[in-house]
Image (cartoon, rainbow, N blue to C red; front, side, top):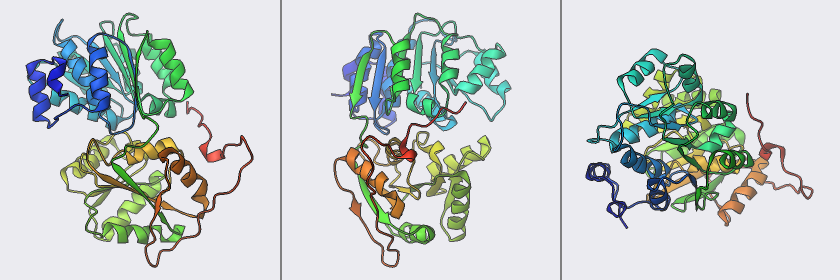
Length: 396
């Protein structure tokens, strides 16, 4: 099966070819038909499986008929990086169609975003907070929305955005097509889907498991030796580009500075940076100026770089879902990737949970001189869930 099987306009097919797409991924091939038919869709698939194109391509096809220069489609994303990534995909796929998109998020001037909307666009890609600001300023009119997309809905729950989403829903027409795409399905997102979707088509592509193009390796190591182990691993020839995850913003910044001083082409991406600095870090990583990016989980869903050879969990994430999102930055589409995780003696339960979702025991690698403590897997009473894996509260 190829993209021409779905009767896309020739201009869209040309853009797809120019972008290097050959055959649809499973989530794409199963999404195109119901979206083009006007059905609501609940799409569940892992990070890195092509969810963005799954809704962008049929959206462009549908918007090619009807009035122009009116906001007819709204895509809501949880992070600036993901919003920018989606907007960039729209621009690339919409070449030659005359359709225009604008991206809106905080950290930059509202005036420029409002001016772009006034010029006439068909698609807005927005983070919830800035969109509500523009609605409050009456700088945007959502009364003509025909298609609404909630992208990475589970991450919006993690970020505490669901109250904002419900406020935005009051501003769009009741009669519309709604698409929800998510990598996981917490109960809160299920409730939202039940509220806003009408007889949806559910598309589910092994969404709880990391993609199978990734190999997973554990490196037992003591806390104090993590940085030196990382330097040794990064010096290996097979490490082409690496995305390194830390748990805190401060650690991301300090680790990137240590790597830079050690001669690596490293930079950081974390929440304390201005939007300009964040964009510079991403652009530098994409262009190859930097081949090491140290990031917090803010980057787990907003980086679309096809040639990341390795993801390294310098710190283990808080949840297995976060592990899936992090490691999904490598092994994109049909490419191969490797995920390395540094584990200390207290990370045993996390290892056990990851091995459960993968359905196999993870490979252990020990670098000479960096032998860590034994990974303990403490027993727990029946029905008890470890505190660090309990459901996180919504941040208001």
